[in-house]
Image 1 (cartoon, helix red, strand yellow):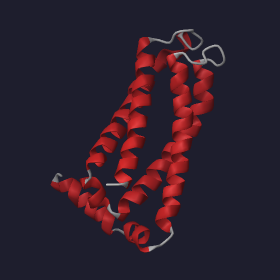
Image 2: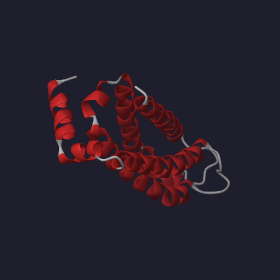
Image 3: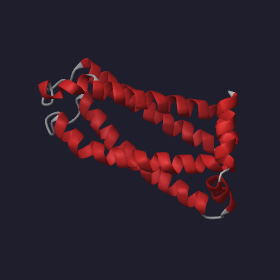
Image 4: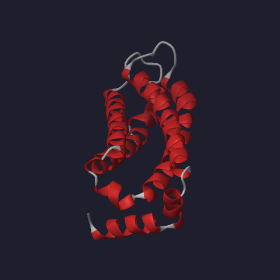
Length: 164
């Protein structure tokens, strides 16, 4: 692990947040529960939107309607997951980061976030041209596939982290 990353992890672990999460019988399980609820808020709408991009439900909702109704909920879930995830990490940051699943989780998280940016600043900029199309552009379907795979992998890696 690079020295800068190790220093940042030690700083997080030694912080008041890390000490509080480690030092209380209830803070960690409450954070973990909220983290799981956040995952539901993030993944449920995101997967539903991704499925729409792949063609499932194209007769029911336009892509823009699906985005307008689903993505704000996903964004709230993402904020909850980031806040609780950092808090959970703070309890044992150096140990967690040393686990093999951590590299997978953070690598896939980077991929998922990069995919969102590429999608929204790429093919989605012209969504008005294809919002009601029976078949979305290949780039939109690829982005949906990457999203589905990346978020599924993040969940699996997170569960492996809990047992490593």
